[in-house]
Length: 241
Image (cartoon, rainbow, N blue to C red; front, side, top):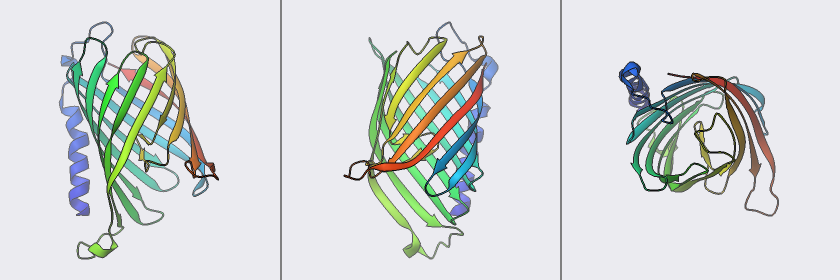
């Protein structure tokens, strides 16, 4: 099973680059193909301080479909791969989209693998982006023995959500956003564990964009004794074709 999972993710990530970037017809205001590299500092009560190195690829195939791939390497000795597929439907006001999200994390330090599949429906306007859906999770030990199914942890149903607001239209050369969600490109949490995000970007020119974002996470969010669990600061540059 481990080999099948790894092969599936490699093929999914590689397939993103089979579409020739040079054929994309980018019009003013349209999304552009982009590759970004980010470095982050994080701290939580489980791993203490550690650094993250992220590589992201965004591909708007056409006005009705886009896809994204993400890879993270962490000095805390865990590694994350993910892919998102988004069919889109243009409305008189805003855009309705579906998102199919696959993510796998190999936590080598604790010898387990976390596989998450999430499907959600979203609605996006210039100032707001909202998503809601369902997810399922499979956690297995490393190395995985296919005959040891009793060691597998299955979480068949959970909710995912995202509410994000922007201070300027998303087509602006600079922006600031505030978000509450239980998922991002590298993590899908249980529904009772929201994360808070503050971020922004600035366009240096038509090709280069710099980004800065922060994440704050509480433990026991929906209980009486909610307290700090972890935080992350992430900065990087994005090149748009």
